[in-house]
Length: 143
Image (cartoon, rainbow, N blue to C red; front, side, top):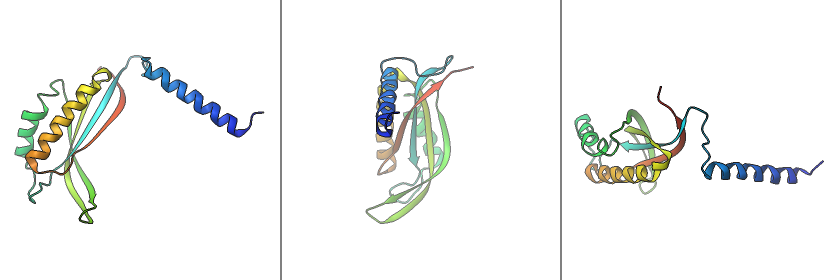
């Protein structure tokens, strides 16, 4: 019987080999689905001057800045977020808009660039310190 450390090393190598195969171009998605990247962008609604991004301002931003970059579709959810400002030692709780977009996995770089452009515009327009972005692997299909 192999020692526990040999078993752990063997397991780690097998996991890395599996990841390597997926990265080498094999579709890691179940049959009938395609690989996508899920992009999530969190837009705080509190402006730097103490005001709040209104629904009218948000709709205009969405129409002018977001939709042209993702014309195939997107989802926006109303959320409640919080973050800790270390420079002020203060916890901020604010309304948040969560933008969710799926892009084909082979378009991840272009999707991320679009998200960066959108985020830069939002920060400038609404006096924001930051916009939080995540990207996650996803498998999807349309029925």
